[in-house]
Image 1 (cartoon, rainbow, N blue to C red):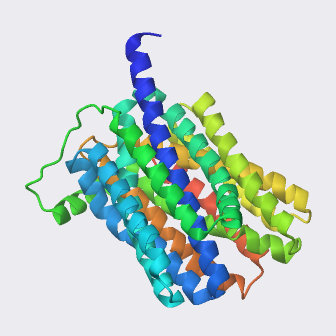
Image 2 (cartoon, helix red, strand yellow):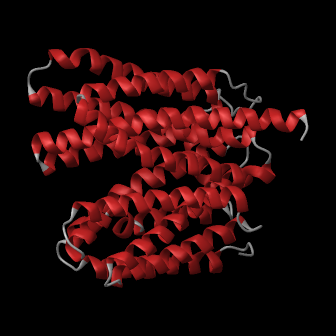
Image 3 (cartoon, rainbow, N blue to C red):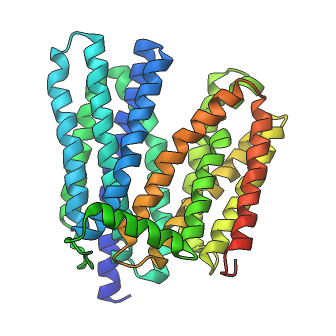
Length: 401
């Protein structure tokens, strides 16, 4: 292995580590806010308000963030987004002891959630666009898999740390952890020298660039199809992925260790899926990798909907989570390999908008529906629909899957 190979690998791992460290602190605070609000208010209205504030700003800013990721230095953009979130968290940390009213405190936390959501919306397209600047094309799938594994480990560890900190400390302590991890992450990122990027024309209005990005993405025979399929995947994965706790409590029993087991198995599957993609690299055709993961996901979704045994449900959840990471990794890699350098930020902005838009839409549709119809039936129906999305990819794409 020559020095050049060592150099880009070192830079890439340093970059991924910096993002995982900041994600760790963010996940701790995000979970702590939801738990704090739930226990403090026991109000569905407040929980719904925080959910909206966590996703809607990210959805709206993603379109602009994609343009900014194409126009400006991505490293500085990531640092500014992280710095803005850190500053808002620091202000909250300092003023929190002075707030005596629960309503004022909850309102302040809503503002923090909005700031964090905006920061995440700005940061995500830039982060995904940086990776192909650092990693040669033939290694993209593997390093996206490594990134997925690192993020899954962080997501696995964050709830345990958040629970421990809240048990022995205070909610304010979690804010301090986030500030420290953000500063460490920013410090590491500052040490990464990125190759020069091809910038878009700053003389064109942002709205014109957004329009151009949308037109480019959906006119491309590969990117357009994968974005549509990704949006449908996010929407239809809500019943099995985001309503798992509700299914388990209704079907298998309202037992805490059942719910804990589902979370642990889910994160373990995602981590293994990242390792698998990091070592294997997927099929030669990235679209075939996406379609294969989607097919496995649809089968597992149907199986989890009809499983009479909790252990069997857990086994299928494990495979489901592996397929989930396979789909996410393949989607990211397809965009990185196929999008024009001058458009890649905007395409990832659209991908971020798909996630932050279709997820709450799915919750709004399937949540009330689950109170009117059996959730098992809804899961079976969504699994069949996911299989149809796989067929859509095969029929509509001119690329051999």
